[in-house]
Length: 112
View 1 (spheres, rainbow, N blue to C red):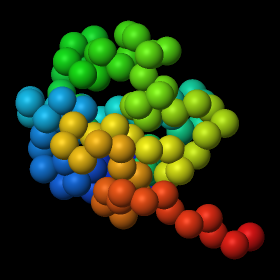
View 2 (view 1 turned 135 degrees about the vertical axis):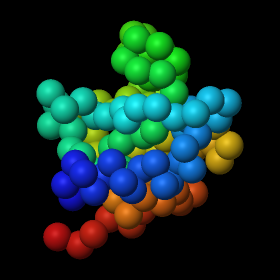
View 3 (view 1 turned 60 degrees about the vertical axis):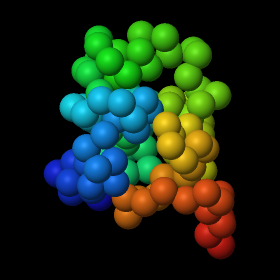
View 4 (view 1 turned 30 degrees about the vertical axis):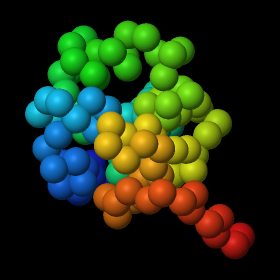
């Protein structure tokens, strides 16, 4: 998916609300697996957060990185974001797909 398409899908999924706190308007897109680690512009890897890289939930995740892998707000370089649950403010642990949806169940692995 292109960056521009991803930028359209993720805000629709979030309804414009921060996907971590649910209390503020989402203002920025956050890569769960960083771009420097090969993190793609795919909705399963991108979440819509309040703040920017230094403020709000986006700043919280960016500045205290080690604390957020267990919540899926960050994804380790060897992990697949689509197979790593994200702790959503309302739904709890959900899986994010590349069509811009949330799922309660882990996606089935595709046959190779």
